[in-house]
Image (cartoon, rainbow, N blue to C red; front, side, top):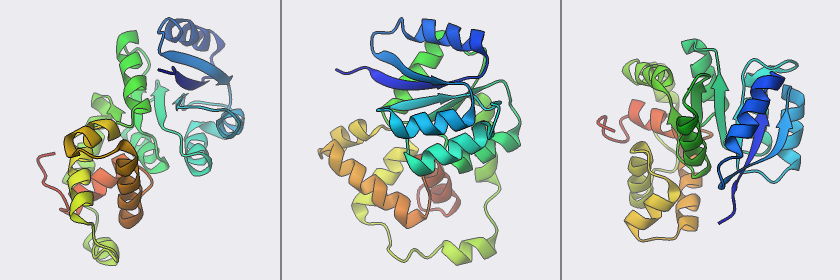
Length: 221
């Protein structure tokens, strides 16, 4: 199996070195490119063959948040944010920008490795701070006026898409969904793309949040 190819984005040279040394101890992880500012990160994300971006937020230049947004728009790579910032407003903006995960610096190395593997496999990874923010978003539904503008889907979800959406909400990866439904993982990707298009969102996390807010799936996910 090919190793997970990582773009490491961190402006602190010593911290970046420490991350590189630790992550390269894992045979299934490979640092293929590094950046110390947002502009370089966006450029490398479109030029390199990558599986996941490990992204700091406090970057010089355009900053980590804007880099996250541009990387998602240009390459749609999965992004795991690793930062010392824990403001809930930042977490909300990162979710809106398309990040698939969020961890605070100081996380155990073993946990970071697990998070990277999960993100690369198509799942999401949120630490306790981010999880609280996501739950808060679910407990404070979007205004009725906004729901009225988007609640009735022009193309309703099919039965299979509904099944897959509920499994996404349970944290299943594409391969796990494929195994459970006895279909090819490529077929799952096609359905996930259709779900994102119909819900007018950019990634799986946003799809689950919107689906829960609009009661498209049970609230116990």
